[in-house]
Image 1 (cartoon, rainbow, N blue to C red):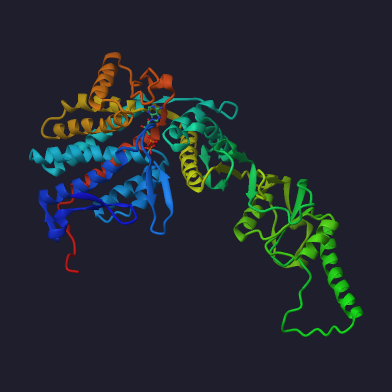
Image 2: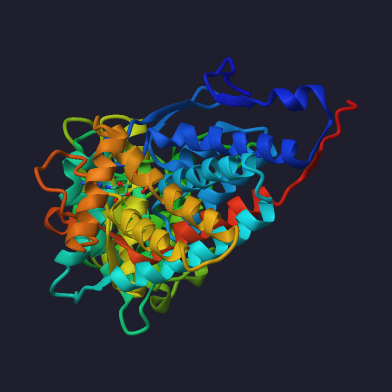
Length: 535
Ligand code: ADP
């Protein structure tokens, strides 16, 4: 089995056995499957933790992605092996359910597969291993519940949430600004959260990005951001208590089409036509004013003359706004999209506390902020950064932080990070193994060893001696009976994760263990791989 790279630099896995044979059975099938799974885990292993490495991935059309998010790496890797695909799915399900811990779950599955391989070599039946793993995972999940802590937060005290989100961000490229970004993420979640029902609709949080500025300039907008500007530079840059007409119909005088014939042979006729056009548009503007609109947002454009007139009549307008954005504006401001100009009525206007235009730097880049909207709590996180790759990675990192905050609102239990929870579970699982007679106990012990894969990877990635560090921390945990001891990745001087404020959500950690066990069990139960080698 080998890991190779194609011409675009994307890694793929070659399983030699499968090249020669179209069918693998029994132990051979399990071993081959295990190696495929392990290969995927090996790729992600170096990305785990605050000192984890990033991966650079190039898509077939040349787009480059730099990330250390497990789900994204696997998503873009284009693996061909079916078992490797299962690992990709594993990471995806963790991302879907929890949103964070996508690297950790694959590393853990890798550890479980590695230990399973050893057991199979010793002649233990895969079903026994699978059963042992199942029992052990239940013990681990219950143990996590026991060592978890509840923490209190409310709308006035969001600090605990911020600190948990900071742990998530500390392993990302954006860790330089983790405090700012964590605060933004928590405030955004709090803005859309329903604390009574303990639910958060993340769809109400839009993440926008624009190249330029610094990461520190990333901001949270309580409203909607549109990548457009006022149609005329002399229109007001700020409108308070805006009544917005949202038009999908043309907002200009009807133009004579080329198939129409207009005979203009005198200057007077031309003047009349011009006046009529002007009057027509003037009436449209008047109609907008009559219904009380103070801002017009149009899907279509209007020409310079119309633009000038709008400025003159003091009716600010925005043109060429996309359909999706129009819909969002309509929902947020409580307005209705008007497809025919005659249908414009006062009730159809959207309402927003402030609409302002902001320009960036010396460039002509301007954006329109629609804030304090009438109807919706929708917020926008506006990311700034030096280049597109940075913005994309920031989007992914913020997504993780948002998910962590949401999970904490759903369930405010936490466990300590830095591998401490895994070590504690490993000790707990190991100590219960003796209670199980028969072969199962070997599998339970193997599970305990597999849990060590996470702290080992964390130590290795931080340049520490993995085995020495792990055994020292484990010994300390047992001696002090304290589940907070983890790997001091950032060389802070203490391995107490409580002091370091490194937390993870309880449900996230439990999900990691459950999902990894599930996938490994599934892989172990496959004893026949039939591939159609005919073509
Ligand atoms: P994932 O995609 O699984 O979230 P990360 O690369 O974000 O992977 O790494 C998360 C791991 O790093 C967790 O086990 C977490 O406890 C650990 N971690 C994060 N920050 C620190 C820190 N400051 N010190 C020690 N461990 C940390």
